[in-house]
Amino acid sequence: MDKALNKRNYQKELDNITAKLEKRPRLLLHSCCAPCSSYCMEYLCQFFDITIYYYNPNITDPNEYSHRVSEQQRLISELSQDAMTHIEFAEGPYDVESFIDISRGLEECPEGGERCERCFELRLSMAARYAAEKKYDYFTTTLTISPLKNAALLNEIGEKQGKKYGISFLPSDFKKKNGYKRSVELSEKYGLYRQNYCGCVYSKMEMEKRNEKND
Image 1: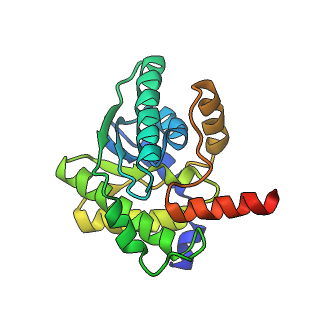
Image 2: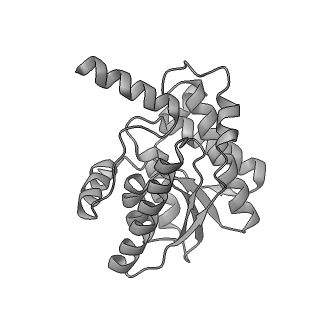
Image 3: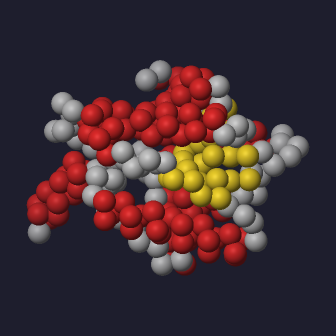
């Protein structure tokens, strides 16, 4: 990753874009889960017509996946009523094999390493392609709200995929401006299920090992 990317202020870049908007563009917002999307939707719906794009083949347990999808849809419904704005929902294919394929050989890689980078690229590539096909004005991801995720890396991947498919990537670092704190508050307000691992079987095993060590 280019070291210069770490010096960029992605939140300021986002602020500069929204300040110049003369209309409400259509935004495809890739969401990793309902809690992370909560603040992102609250913030972005001031400026954009939003469609949540739920594409997360890294959630390898089908029951876990279904639970997270239903929580995402419930939050969209409740947030839309409270904010009096319409937020649409689109679900990508649940193709776990695609995640397993890009993870092959990286099963023991620690969370935050190369396996995660490939996972980000898989998900943002699909989001970019969908956004381009459906002629959205922008696409972006909720992943930058997590204090555990590398926002510079995510923006780099998003911009790369945007150029590949001819769609503008909206820069972000949603944890800024107390975004992560606000997402916790909204999760409590709406009683959202907050998972304790990212979703893949490998991160779940890491989580279980940490819990055993702490016990």
